[in-house]
Length: 372
Image (tube, rainbow, N blue to C red):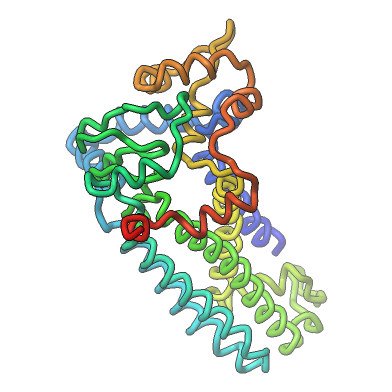
């Protein structure tokens, strides 16, 4: 019986560890450490298997599909996300809600769940269809006055070859959307939109609602689970062992019994608990960027321009990126030997935590600027 519970725990640990390795293994913090090496080894083995076992036609089809889904602007991941939200809503309604009423649990439990799901739907759609801060010839001058050029990462006179005008400080041309974006953070394929100065607050709130909603959903499902175990007297019951003798029910046996009788409930509780960890970490990272007034793009640029040492070389991707980087910024950062020195050297646009958050949640409105 204990083997069943151990398998569940192993599944959760393996899923969490694998997700962490693939999501964080290529970051500056882990790239040259154990996590980064494990990720690189897994990728190399996977690529070897992919290239030597599968036929060329299948390889091309798979590669083209991945390129189309992840590296072009499309609504595929939006549809997947909406289907996941629908799945969670239906699963809760069918597998959890009846037991909330049956066991006389507070109706506020379900109200909170549906309210969280509704807010998440609204924020997802708002983020998907919001203007991230698109820069055009008509508003370029207004955006140009928002941030001063620091002379390191952002240099005055840097032209966007596609749009044909000088890029304002902290802006970047998005290859997916084919437009320059004010205070560019990143392009999010899940919302099929850029995340920039005008909608980063929506994206941050979306992440927070997903994380908090997952935690709350786990709590409600766990409360229903525990209440059902108690109301049915499962912990006071006995079971017949392999030797034919009666044994008192343990927590492991109760968990297995509930899983076999109510698989939807246990599956939802497990998935939400894992989701709360993964998205919670991602939301915490973006909250850190918000309170320090950094963008993902700036964080990436600061981290990837690492100084060379006798025992460490830059990767080919870093070298390619470095050729496109401002020579002043690259030279100044390369003189610093640690990440802490680099981040201290380039202080960016931080105005203090409170003013940074005000800037994030009450972004610059180019339309009001034009009226003035």
